[in-house]
Length: 112
Image (tube, rainbow, N blue to C red):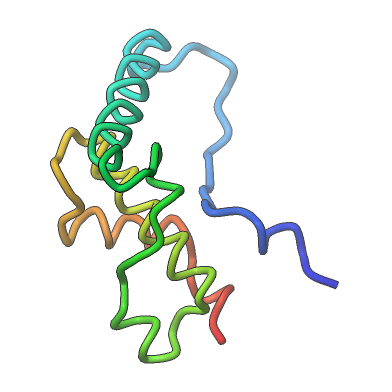
């Protein structure tokens, strides 16, 4: 039987807070950035018949070919790298976006 963590794309540790409000982005700012990221993905993939990064599954061939990723993890990591790129306002994933995706995803859980 597989663990539910096998179906999750992200693994993020969040530190406990004292309950007091913390400084950071407002919910409206975060919502606007997410909306812009989704619009960027929809515009990028429209000609390919896709509407979101989750629809696109190419990339990270080196890790896949080396047996360090399962085919499922390969697709998820690339989709996550595109999402990170969109959230940062970049046109496409760069090395930092891919590294962030790998760090968030923990591909060692999904090796062949």
